[in-house]
Image 1 (cartoon, rainbow, N blue to C red):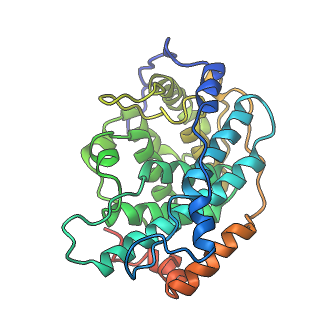
Image 2 (spheres, rainbow, N blue to C red):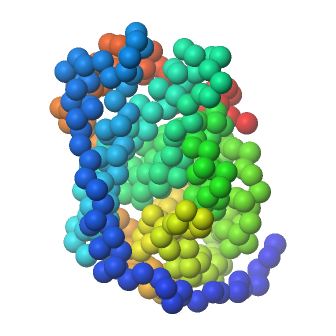
Length: 319
C-alpha cells in the first residue's frame, strides 16, 4: 500500500473566486415546464402512435433550480431545502429519460442509431448531492440508475468518450465501493489519477488522519480542474468549481458506516462546506409532477416496474 504523502499542486492561481462563480451561475438561461404542462393536458409530444415522454422539462428546470441553490450556499445563505426541491425534479427527469431510452430500443430494435442522450455527468452530480443532503436511499438508487445507463450505452457519446471526467468516475466508483454490488467496465481514463486511486483504496480507513494529505491534494486538484470547458478542453470540476462535491460525498459515506471524518483546512472547504449539510426530509412530488406521473402510468403501465430497483439491478444492466 502506498502511504507516502502525495505531491500537492497547491491552489491554482486561476481558480475562480466565489463571486466570479456566482456571476457565472446567475447568467444561466431560464427554462420552462411548457413541455410537461402540454403533456399533462393530453398533448401528444411526438409524431406517430408512440407516446413520447416529457423528458425536456424536469431535468433542465431542476438543473437551473440546483444552480440557484448552489448560489445560496456560496453566498452563505440557507441552501439545503432549495437544493432538495431541485434534486426532486432532476431525479424524476432522469427516471423519465432512462425509461424512454429503454422503451425506444424495445420499440425500434433495428434502428441504426439508438438513443444515446443521457448525461451521465449530471446524473453523477445529482447522485452525489442527494447523498450529501441525506437522501441516502434516493442517492443510492440514482447510482444504480447511472451505472445501468452506462452499462446499456445510454450515455452521450461525447461526454463519455471525449471529456474524460475523472472526478465523476471517481464518485461513481466510490459509491460502488460503498455498496459492493454495482460495477461498470471503466475505460482507462477513470484510473489515471493517483490521488483518487489511493482514496478509493483507503476511503473506509478507520484512522481519518491517513486520508488527510490525500484529501488536501484532492482539494488542490479540484481548484486546478475548475476552469470553464471549451470546445477542445474539458475539466473535471467545471460544473462545480467552488463546491467540493467529491469530498462531501466521501464524508457522508464514511459517516453512514460510522467513521469519523478528518478536518480539512483548505479554502475549498470553507463554510458552508466545512460541516455536514442539514439532512432533508423525503421529497413530496408537487401537483405538476403527480399529473405527469399519472399520465405516464396510464400510457405506460410498466413504468414503475421498469424503474424498480430490482429490475434496475438485474444482470441485464450490470457487467
